[in-house]
Length: 201
Image (cartoon, one colour):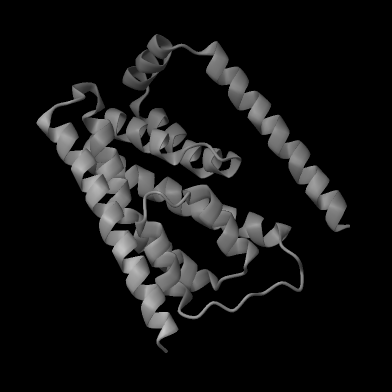
């Protein structure tokens, strides 16, 4: 029964990927730009849905964030991204949980802090973490709250980079890169501190 469900999920996933690739091949940049200008509200809906769906198929989320910054600016881009990302985070959690072994449940001490710190680290794959938390059956409440707080800094930084992506090399763009590196260093430091405090208990 479990195998049949997995086969169905794989077929649905493959079909959606084929449709998405076909759309991307058909459309060109100019058509997309014109569509955004002429259909602002629909563009917002498509952007949020893209955030909800594309990461499921391991689409690189920084690209989506860059697009959001370029299309909507820092404030609106951050809001729309957070909406789409949080819905996606829950969807991927349940997919991971669905694909996990029925008897598997690993107890992780202070799961909130563990997820929070991993969310802060830009180099930790967003997609993989979503699936892993569901697969390991981490508590949903801690997962959602830690994810919401944890993705805010990285989202703002990536949206800001997207907003200034056409001004590559400018002061604003370079400052965004600096903030991204700073977030990486701080979050890795937090991870080390959390690991050491866990061992000392």
